[in-house]
Length: 329
Ligand code: TXA
Ligand code: MG
Image (cartoon, rainbow, N blue to C red; front, side, top):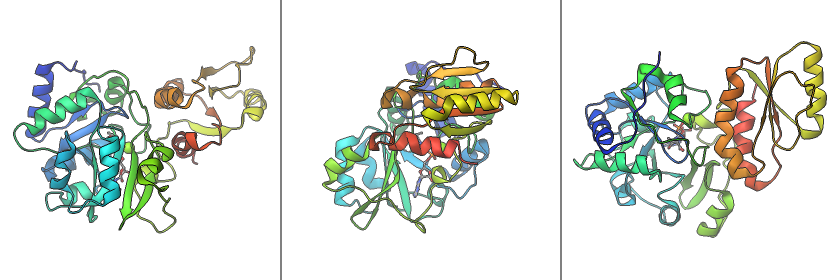
């Protein structure tokens, strides 16, 4: 079933804010991916998010704020490092996990003692959050607007394809510029922990924090996007080193399998009978197009999707993380 999308005119944004206030779900663009929003202070509305996504109800969702000033309403304490990161990167693709204030309900935190907070940079997200906050009820809970475990949406059409009429409204803000989700940083007392690599690189975090965030080991709290399999296309997907790609394509072709290939440096073999996408070679372009590319390949129902392995370089950490989960069997 499909749902039409709305251009983000001031009237549409006002209508969207009104729907959020009445407990309905509104999908909206952010600079990272599209979010599926609900009034964060209405537990019933937040529960509708989980229903629409088919997501387990005990997973926490990020609360989106229009302004960093609202941080103190949602977080009980703000470690110095968190304040520095907020000042440096908000509005932007950064989520802070902080000790929750009473207004952060269990529906939003999944029962954790922490809450995830982010001030997004996309002008439509900002306009919606500001319109929503105008009556004093700020805070929009929003996970990525996809079915649970699936590839995140980076266009309004992706949201319509995944969630159809499970949402009251989809605001169309065009394709997302960052293309992968926000970087998530938590704090253990004052020690910064990288919970999910994302739109803000680790180098940039380290410059502001004066130290590199640690990567939590086993036994650390798990976040839904950190499950081994996530961000996954429907077809079986595999990471393949550039030098092995042609041989692997040939091997599958001999078995009459239809392949979809997401290449980056390897050129398409002239005899290939399949679907081939040349992804941008630079990391920003690659990340921006990644989910749309995976969805395009998936749409031809291939027997397998082969993804050329990205460079083993810190700048590619977040992309590599998504690809490893997308190809996890
Ligand atoms: O870029 C993004 O972050 C997008 C846009 C819409 O803002 N949102 C997004 O939300 O990716 P979601 O729900 O798909 O992923 C958020 C991640 C999940 O892995 C969730 O478990 C984790 O953040 N998270 C949220 N609150 C948390 C908390 N209190 N403690 C630990 N993890 C938390
Ligand atoms: Mg998600």
